[in-house]
Image (cartoon, rainbow, N blue to C red):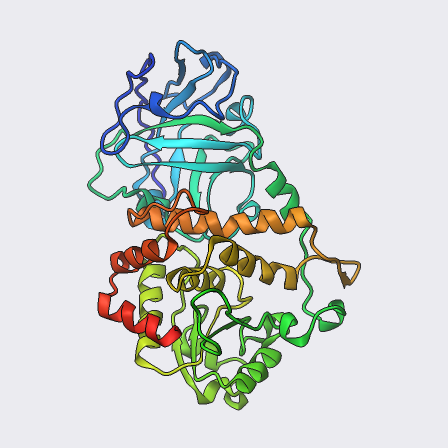
Length: 418
């Protein structure tokens, strides 16, 4: 068995207000805002951990500030091969005080603090999002990045000294509950007949990017023009031809894999410039970041119009287009609206026909791109926590510089998209 679970004894900090020191940018666990904290005082007697561990909650004089302190499971294969951070507490015990749909702050002193939803399934969050996976029956929790590696996200490397403690506190009771309900209501069809109200372009998720600062006929996005798996490729390919797209950025495939698709050789796509990135939507992790930079440099080196796509044109494409929109001066509202347009094109199909998303569903979907960008930018020390009021163009330039682009490349990219 490759997995070697070595449970380390947790060490418990008995916290009075201001007495839990965190290194780097975290001065104390007591510094966490009480705005959304739980009013319940917890007792350690209601929790179960492994036989080699102990656990306690401590509270401030307010009695509303409660923090669970427990250790990471130090399985280096799990941590450094998959990036999963296993937290040493029995899931069923954790669920006696926290619920699915809660948002919690997970604090790893000296590394990072993340606000994440408590969920029971990887499908309960969108690709690229961070979450706390709590599965009834498991003897641990998992702090995860869907399609990414959480160890790298928080900066935990092989030189880390264990034991490493983790503190978990309530951020917002039920703060993710509506998202869970919304996800369960979404469905997609691969048949154009299921979308009688959509144009062919909307069905193919094909559109020109028209946000502030973006030039006419410069940048397009779509579902895959070559992958037949969702029934949209031929529409996307023909629309790209009509638009005169000269350069494609394929986030989803390797060149060899793309060329294996039935009909690839006969496509318009096969006659144009294409760069194949073959990346997963782990937006805060090295493979995606390196692929993203490769795609941007390919744009600088080739003429437009340009088209970015993955399979659906939703997750990887949604993120990369949002970054380019931000770089060119798009507003927060424009970025959120364009991201949500894809979901409006795909969802929600009921009884074989599309039913329009409600205003609330669209609003919830818009918040996804905000979380994705905040999280990925934060890893590069770029703060866009106040997304609505941030200077997104300046922040994005700083972000791209951190990823490795040169200023001259960014200037050239802007000039090509202007």
